Image 1 (tube, rainbow, N blue to C red):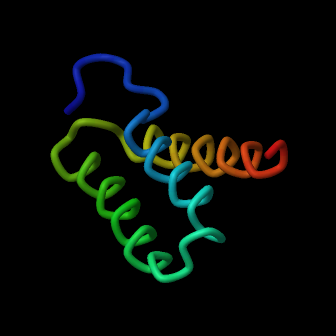
Image 2: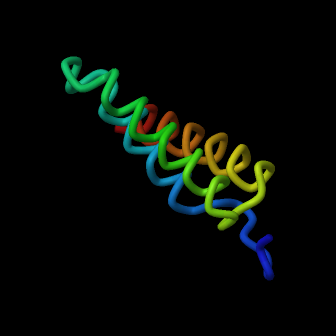
Length: 73
């Protein structure tokens, strides 16, 4: 179990932000990007590095940051 606070999971947030930003520009990599981001999220929970709530919050924040980046491009 995690010994300290890890809210939100920053590796998950970065992975999902990259996925959102690259979604339209590199259409060929859509599925691999989603799979990689999901595997990063699952690995965080699997190795007890983060709680599931930390990973979900990281994914939501990453998606929001990616959308924000696209909106102000």
